[in-house]
Length: 156
Image (tube, rainbow, N blue to C red):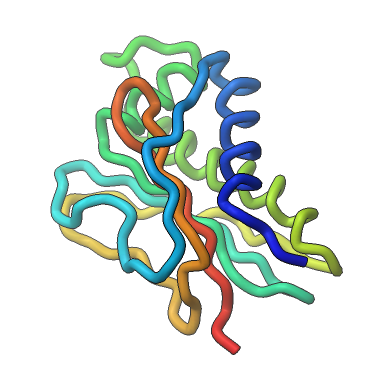
């Protein structure tokens, strides 16, 4: 079954609205390969990825900068920005990836399983899924910065 960037937009906007009670706007939507969603080397960059295996194989990746990740965590956990620590930030970005992957998985058809999310953070890294190519990526304006969501598919 084929999925499209509009499917990702719908899924992520629904997650954002239900979990955070906020609207989300699309900044850009692109197809094609890219190794990163946001500029490499940005301070406090946070990225999370869930793998999809089974009849369809690939991954869903979420990328955001530290201030955006902090505001997501604060909203998700009902905390003030100054109260949010690294654990909450990692949990929040991991949960967004997990929920996005969980809502995308049924759109793929067939029998698929979802991995636990992995989270990477720092100023100088690239999170890659070897053997996979980007189908498309959607960048959202969260009102506090950009968050990218990328769907990757295993190469044939």
